[in-house]
Image (cartoon, rainbow, N blue to C red; front, top):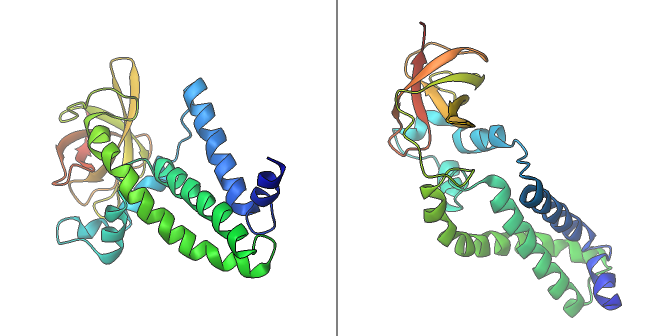
Length: 209
């Protein structure tokens, strides 16, 4: 056990161990408290930096994100798996090479990251269909068409934003884009008219009573 801790917290492996611990703490907090850190803005930016490509074909970057399910599965879930696989690779490979305390050992982070991504791709696959059936609180998918929400991240025609709406006793956030050239700022009311072709975001317009 002492040897394991020595390897895990060695000069080279310390970073991988630290990230693995941080993600473990996050999931423990999430499981036992129900606290869900708000990283949806990051999801929106990663998945929709180039929204104009949604209807004309994916860019290379969008294809990479889609390949690793980023935007379809929670980004923290993906990063957690990558971090765990990287850590497992590092703590097993560096002692075999005798690099756990040598600067050359940091070279292994790149292949470990690539291998972690590929392993995550395989392991996350069964979760994809399940996650599509449920929203982030584990409820069955909801028909949002016709529902009114409040903008919480600015929406433009060529910029994905977010709206917040109530469903029964829950408050839910979804990605949205303007159906017209009009921009909707935080706090404005909008109505959902339809879903995008890939069902990753909704098209909205202003809602005035």
